[in-house]
Image (tube, rainbow over all chains, first blue to last red):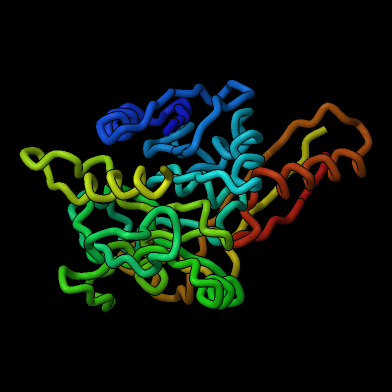
Length: 227
Length: 80
């Protein structure tokens, strides 16, 4: 299985993502944002970081970079595209995913472990996952998901909500919402479920001694689903 | 020709920065504030001398990059 991670100026989770993908069996290639063509891949990842210094709006400039034309084409033809953190922000700026990510409600940069509840298992990312509640890491200043009422209805009607912020039992009350995100949304899909954007970083949870193993579960399951 | 554009958050979008500024103003004794909304202002010098064309170019920029129309509105406020 082949994957590609796009590096933008200011990406800083690109190498971590590359390490994670390789650890669980992907043959990964790093791709520079200024390239035109994607290598032949089963999965494209837009990593976390601060592309273009988060100037203007997070992800806005990266969403217009050269390689993104190919990424959009790949996504529109059904290819798997996953955006983590800043990658999620880039995906909403391209319009591949609905809504936007605003500044966190209390204006704080949040860096901590959270629990997320998987809402939709009927897709290549979460199908067959052995756990429904994952402990993952978040680190962001703009993770406050927002969309219009109309968009929210459409997202809910099409089962596009991927994961919610929750407690360890899967309760999704407001008190487990770290950033003010609408409905506790931590990640969403496009209509076809081949594009996933989420704020939590699974690549930071792939080593028992350093963090936790729920990211490992995610990646092992992902590669099995793609095979 | 210089064209200015102003970008504001739509009415229903939460503006945490505006809220904090409002609180700070309150703390300074400006007790007569109903609400503060923060926005962005751009001054763009376009290589175009026809005001109508220059405005159109900046409008296109606003639609394609400067504004996220899900949460923001833009207004071209002056050309000179």
